[in-house]
Image (cartoon, each protein chain N blue to C red):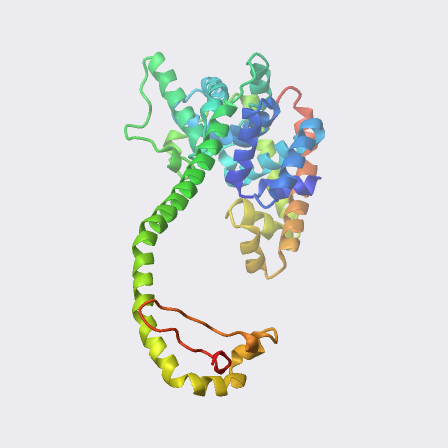
Length: 199
Length: 173
């Protein structure tokens, strides 16, 4: 099943009353939605609140979600509306003057707009997480690193990676998992030390 | 289990396997944590400059105050019923059209066929009159004589009020 179908299955679970399934969707999209909202709401604390509000609004609106669009498109639209309403309530204008398409939000990058004002503690923690992940990636054997990079950064399917790396799909599956798990092993101690802070 | 999460994240797991895996994640906080960490790794690799603190714990806290949402199941059921009803109606209407057409055609075609048969009959009778002896003489070579071994004993007889009775067999002399 595709990524969209995974989301749809989770959505259907939520629609049947499974709150935990929504938790998995939050885990999956929290940073993407937060990043999107931070383009509208510059203050990081405010952006965090708005992101939470957007998730809650999405949860309340989920019974009406019929799967005609991808879940993340629908969620991003809610995020953008929530951010704009937040700015409107505070008599501020959104930083973009042109219409913002949720479909394009994944690829929309403009460094000047991305000014996240984290607390020093959060900034340090963010930096440590990034450092650990990148250092772990560099320590991986070449075949594992390539497989994970092709999947996570290039977004290739297992079949495409198998073709690129000239190996069976089962090998791709195994390499990506081993790479993720190797990075996760280095990351877990750091995440466990930050009590009360989930990543 | 961890590998299944990895495969699920990549959209490469089968639907039934995903369903059971979601159930497992729901029961185990450790497995849930694996789901979160793997997604964090992906986010860091894609956007290392924009990693910030996760919100899932806070959203989870707020979700506790939220009533459980339930999608109206009637919508899905109604949709299925509508689909079934439409297909059934289409089938019934197709059967109705076919039946109506056969009813419309039969009364017209039947008399025509009857007329054609009556028109042909005198001709066939003429042929019978002329070739009757020949046909009877070679009857044993007819394929119909192999039918159940008894066809050779069957005699065809026809009668017309307009004409005199026709002798079909030498036995009738």
